[in-house]
Amino acid sequence: MCTAGFDQGTKEWARADLTIGQPEAVIDGYWDWELAMNDGAAFSRLRGSQVLLSLIALGALIVLGVMAHRTRPEQHLRRIALAVIAGGAIGNVIDRIRDGAVTDFVRWKAGGHMWPIFNVADVALVIGVILLFVDGFLERRRERDPRPALP
Image (tube, rainbow, N blue to C red):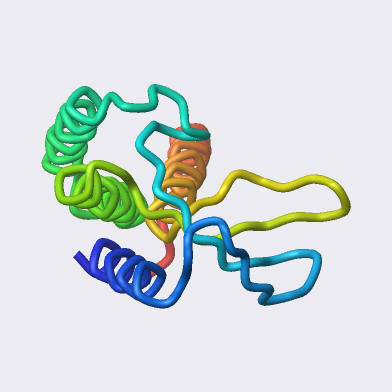
């Protein structure tokens, strides 16, 4: 719940201190705080489909719970990854249910390119997925080299 709590706290700050469509430079030319309310999925796809997107997120949370329940006690990295993903999903589904849109407020840019606006929950989702890939890579490596771990 730390991830979801941090996400919700930062979104509360953004909604209180930022104005939609008025960027505030953090690092001029590279990073802005820019409030946006995203009623779609990633990159504003499926706009206006709040019920569908909320149901998908709740279904994903159930799948994450089942996956976490099936992990072995020694699978620490996998458990952390699933928890971080769940925290990000919870943070965004709270917004969808409460506000009908996800609060985004971080804008990165370089030169003429601007990345889509995102939030802490989105970062958690990406980090969690990366950790799952790392865990899978390490698991395959352990299966190929079954030497016992050092105490």
